[in-house]
Length: 133
Image (cartoon, rainbow, N blue to C red; front, side, top):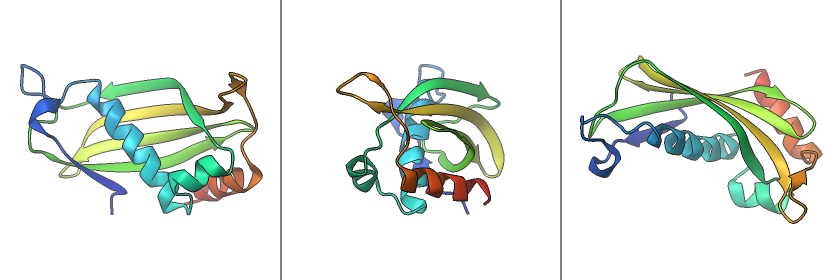
């Protein structure tokens, strides 16, 4: 069962009728929030614990277009956890056809100091547990 669903809205498509390329990152960002919720870390709890994930790398591979009113399935897998960073792979599909893959690398940041900081231990443990799923 997919982690998240996204219905493509009219304002998200370009003049060719395709889901505009930058919107895939928006869909992936919402899916990241849902991923954390699914492992017991709703976003407000995540932030309160000292986690502020910022994207440092995003690689989007497009395979087929999505169109207005498509109901997209979005799956997320954690594929790597470091000291202050983690990687999520997001697969966006329609009717079991993969449309795009988004590889996102996040770093936990201390916004007041504008630098990375270690993931809180409880968050890192939850991410590492998700590696096994």
